[in-house]
Length: 443
Image (cartoon, rainbow, N blue to C red):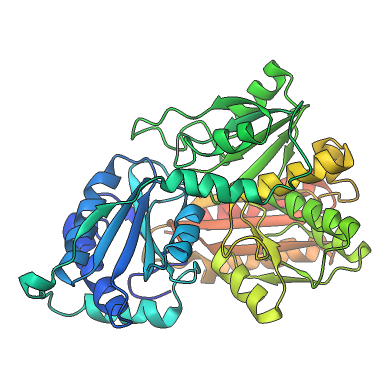
């Protein structure tokens, strides 16, 4: 991570640096200076539904304009939609104002390059270099202008639909779609409805303050209740910016990102279209690794974060990867993870094979895995404390090679993520609590 950029752009609490109007204005100027060097002075700006998006959008516009860069506003738009539109509009970059699955009082800024990929470390470093310089302004005749893009949502809806095989239809399929009161609220229901499904919407009434609150991929209780109440075939939950997906079957059981990746690979093998291997992360369930091994599919783990999954895919020249949290990447269809596209691919397999969501993940059995998030004081490093390392060694000895322990710092919040995986669910829970208690004891 750089001085300002984390694993997923720049993120924090609104009103506290770096998510303040003055800093974001300068960020727009710095990014404009770095990007304008290519000669392309067109930048797209999309956002999720947080109330702070209006303020930060205006600050970015002023910064880009002062650097001589034109901006085009997309309005509320999923993160993967901004990546797609950046590429198709031939813009120099796309900017997303979003803190993804975080609460409304957080926000962030992330960038996509002209190819629809996240900015390289080199470009991020150039932006950070400008951020540490004095802000200046181009001459008035060279100031950037601001425009509003027309039918951005419609363009993206048509792109999503194009991934669904033309010979298939979702007619007869009842879907509950949960948009987390986020950026997909006006897009995802229309995509599935236009493909023929009966769509029941929840989490589609954003008010600026309710994004991810009780709805979406990080809180599935309301989706589970709705699927059961409506006797739906499937429930689809997206997060606040639309790049994560979780699925609920007709019984209310959850199908997570690892299982979705496995299902898509298994279906591609049946179709004769799969090639290469799969990239997961250090958090990916060992059950997926074992299931892929039975399919003779190579599997490697990357660091947590879709950018690291993407880096490994490009290095291996593979195209499928993802995270248990619901990021699913298929480079045959898009340059970044996309919750709606992953759902479409899953649904097309269901319809083609006349299967239920649970049938789609047949052959994979997840090992019990417990993840506990523990807050820590910024400036301390619990991972290097003796009591924590001793607890980890003790648990690893008890697991005796039949499980895993992983501790890592979140890239977006002051949290230590404690993960324990093994064969026995009760033991795994006890081991995770044992280590979490030691992490929490660090002052």
